[in-house]
Length: 457
Image (cartoon, rainbow, N blue to C red; front, side):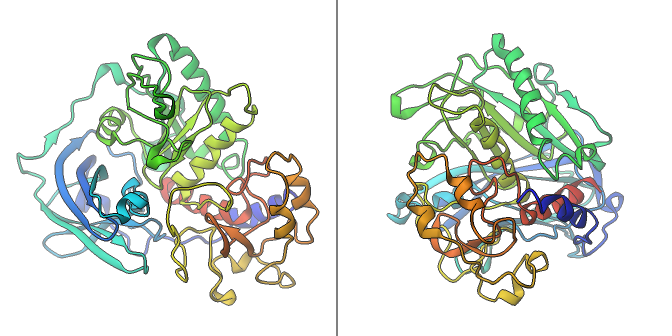
């Protein structure tokens, strides 16, 4: 795969990626501040109720002043802001949620109700706006979940007060936040005495991220910030070992009953700390040697920062970059053999929204058809049976994949999205498929480049 990446990267860097369909003059509708709407998602597998928590006025807006309307259609949810007087759409973003993942679990299918806290953020409006939250159901149909009229002058809006103890520090400052991707890194399970280690980890994982294309070629489009938010105790919760820690954000293993899955449920606390910094995306490093992490598109990513006696030195770095791919560009998991607690996460016959997954319903309309050579068949054959028969402890996975006829080609290889059949990935190997050093495939790079440009122009 490495052979094709340099030439394809040049092609991608110069490709005409989608621009915002309607140009909205920022100064006509917004001030240079942020409105954060906190809400609750409550329901079961087939029922959802959205209820308002609060509205907060945060200092500064870190996002683009020009790309206000989303162009990707990524995510299970969407926030749309309209001018109340004219009905003009003035801001939109797609996102996913831990709630929508939970809806695919056995617990939700049994009719047990659960509630999750979430937030959407957008530039602070000058005039009254309508906020609409919608979701895409299992049939790819959009349904409106919540609608609210917000007068920016109402006394119900709380004003956020910055906290000195959570002042952001720059790790990489390339320019004006409006014209850069602003990444914020937060610590979990690092005590005050371990802040030096946290700073070292910020340096380590930032360097790892920028060692991969296309991030390395676009490094000047990023600002990286971090906040030293110490925990009372070192480490995070691990319910399987009856181990519970007093930490800043309450991260825990066994999210959705999957041992390795670590994802925040204390959304409000994280948002309140993060509001002290300019940010588009939040990564959380948690101080643990146990393999784990998690990520949800346009919400948060988490990754463990140390290794235990049985882990490999590369694994924490892999997890950080892999999870960032989910958070940043909406990339889907391309593996299919790992244990998950989801039920039919990708419904049969429905095209996944993720840019690197497909059911290949129509090869001529394949998402990444422009990157497939004419002599590459669709679907693309590979010895999947032989791969599946390799011992799980085998270190020969990469060698096996490299021996395949279509190694280094973009095609459609069956086995992806937690499903052995019916879902396809673009290449034989990618950091979204295996714990490899192959990096992101050209299709994933294309999605990453699109996101970088959207947030930095």
